[in-house]
Length: 507
Image 1 (cartoon, rainbow, N blue to C red):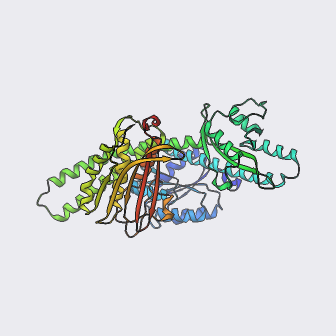
Image 2: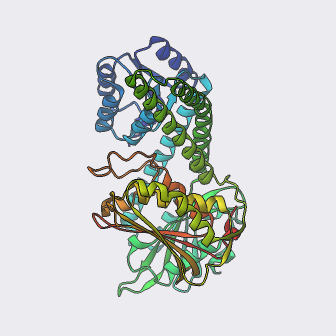
Image 3: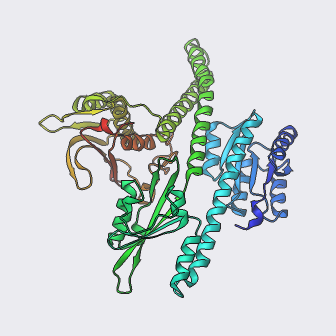
């Protein structure tokens, strides 16, 4: 991305003059240069004429002529780096979410307050700034690495000038080099010398284990090396990435560990979660009122026109779906922000699974499905965990199995024990069906928010796309693991592994 795009230049595309002028006043106070267009085609023309100088677009979805979704598509084709913020007062929250799936950065619902616009646009500029800095650092890194083999002193000069923290270890895990940025990021004494093990400089077990594994040659392929995030006592967040230093004969000589400050990104995520929670709370109350009123009207419409009843029933169904979506968004937001409350207590897993299977058995029977619970002869032990979290985990998985299995299909829920190499002895619960299955290309996205597999067999199945992300978040918070095994046309199996004392891992 070129440096000229760092200027604060914003385009407002909205057919309402008051909205355009109001946003312009707010943005000019933020030091922005503002362009305006009343229609989608004129907005695209402005983008073309300014030759890539505009970095943020405020875009209305409902406009005469070319609608906002088409304009969004054209913008992304022109320049993927432009951040598009949707302004909508007509579309449902589902439409705004769909726009974000198509590449929009965020959305602002009408009517809005000036502070709301300032916060969202401010976050967008902060994201752009961080992206520009990362790209600039990457360009600088590539330039400086061109002649590293010319002189040893130049290597040290290059490493010490890098903006990110760099630590180099030898084959036995001793630190042999630290650049000033590394010392500064970790609040270490600028005069601190290398020579000790990693733990002497970084008080984080995960960081030290990753550095040691790379130093000892555990990863033969650099693409297999995981990244790691750490939070330090000084309130800073860092992403840790490492690469092995290989000798001419292929032996591992040590590791280069790169430390990137992601504190600003974490703060942006927190602000966005707060925004989602606030909007969801504001929407839930009026929707619940409408839902209850529709239910009351339907109850009193006995004998009226069937067409009127059908329309009202559909409206009631849609408001119920929106209320469910908002509830799932709030649950996921609390899980991701770490504010969800757990109430660990002894749970008889046998009884809990039986209760869930009995409750959902009626739904399975309506599709003539077989829903079977298989437990070992000796009862599963009582575990310490939050029962509400467990009910949400297994309830979501079994409901998904029912929804994505054809009529007359088979669903099996089973519980036993498993000895896991990395986790030790765990309780294992499997939910397996012989339903539609999931293609391999979709499996890595199955736990992403709002992702749903859509094909001829599943397009009529309703849902929010948040059930599995909620399950994944809860399993992680209980110190467990969830695994997927699926094949199209043959079925799907989810395996949940839980520690015996799951409550120990709750926050």
